[in-house]
Length: 180
Image (cartoon, rainbow, N blue to C red; front, top):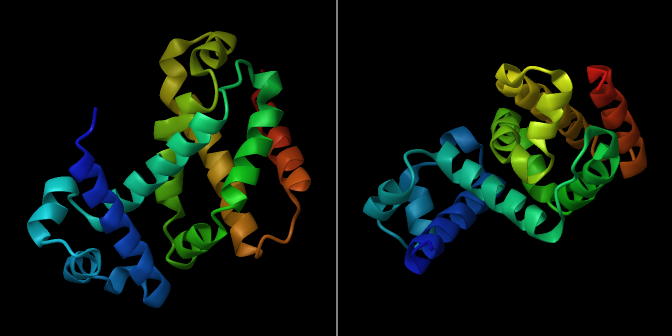
């Protein structure tokens, strides 16, 4: 079980970084600014994170944990549509955060987080079984994360112009290109 004080410190640092990202470009935000806003010392920052990117990855992990706690993982690829819909609906509630990622050209971090958290969303072993080659695990994860992150990024870039149904249909069509 994680230390409560550690979790609180991480959450304060994440909120401080998000606060600063609303005010200035990500590249100009310093660790000092983050620590001052969080009311923590630099030592606490470096005890918990090695970089600003680590804070964002932590924050995204928390989002995926929250999502996973609200939804059960779907067991097969043909049933991916409900989980894709749930993901878009869930992430649409984090529009401000998604805009900050897009504005600062940080969607690659979202893709990395999706790869890391993919097991919370779909049954990777079942998908690998359908592919017939467990050694392709990293390619499958990368493909799914790339498709989802790219569609999500374009949705943000278009100022959320399309409705969720359109995005779900598009994303599932792209996923079905796997011929599973």
